[in-house]
Image (cartoon, rainbow, N blue to C red; front, side, top):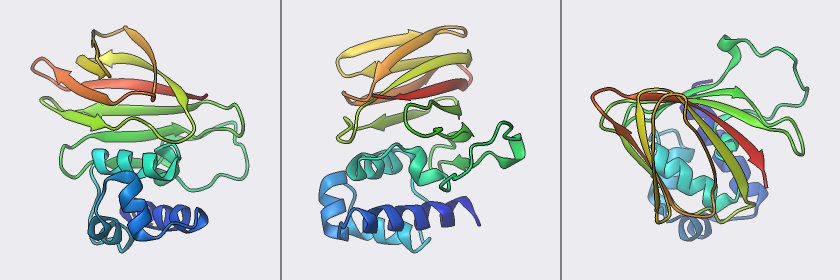
Length: 184
């Protein structure tokens, strides 16, 4: 199954599980009914911003749109088994290193942003959670509501999803970071 087909099936399943029509999800997420329908029919590959809005509208972590449900907890998750998604517009690369391990478990995501990339996410409307971002390579600016943080390799930022977020690469190259996501 391609990543776009996985996103389509997860989006449809989550929308139906929450009893939402296309119109209701469109209103909750700020994404048009036409775009949601195209994503669900695998006719369009969504951008990071659209995925973020859909996840927020559904009240689920972004990872739930990018990964299959994991029933059994595994000790070892080989790199080849980690879901990878690329934003078709910005080239943003997201690798699901470790899925959330049940209640209270942390999730780990590796992200690569090309140079001159800007990715914006709306304020989260679902169950709140915390994130820790550890910058491995490059430079990154994060606008967390009205606060702005400029990170260099080795810097670690702790923040929530209670405000709008903007990620912007700095300098002549892209950046790579690890994101650890913890429930509420």
